[in-house]
Amino acid sequence: MSRIDQIRESLREVYDPELGVNIVDLGLVYDIREEEGQVYIQMTLTTPGCPMHDTIVGGVRWVLSDQLGIQNPEVDIVWEPRWSPEHMSEAAKEQLGYF
Image 1 (tube, rainbow, N blue to C red):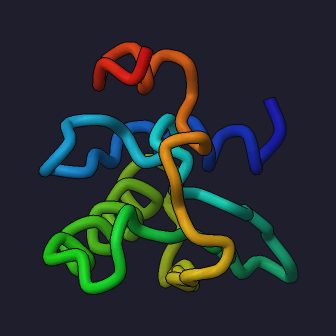
Image 2 (cartoon, rainbow, N blue to C red):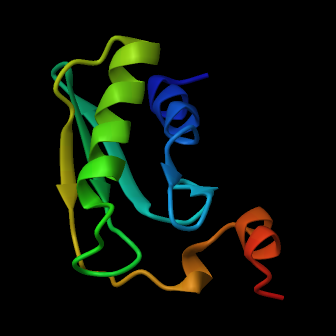
Image 3 (cartoon, rainbow, N blue to C red):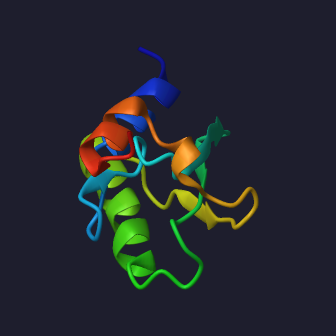
């Protein structure tokens, strides 16, 4: 398993507390890169001004540090492309009743 795959799998343990679905299956994680030892995560939230912003970003940082020893990952919250339910995995859609 590649390092990026390990990071993605670890991020499956970070949940949107309002929806109860992990951020990977929700389609919130847009990009994962590692360059010169620095990990970069580009992601979004389900809505701008999401009250769970700090909780979710803190969860990303904690899980990467705890599971993979990654210190100070750069977590960039972006609003383009805008999140929509189409970004969700089939499992997340089923869990949230989007069929």
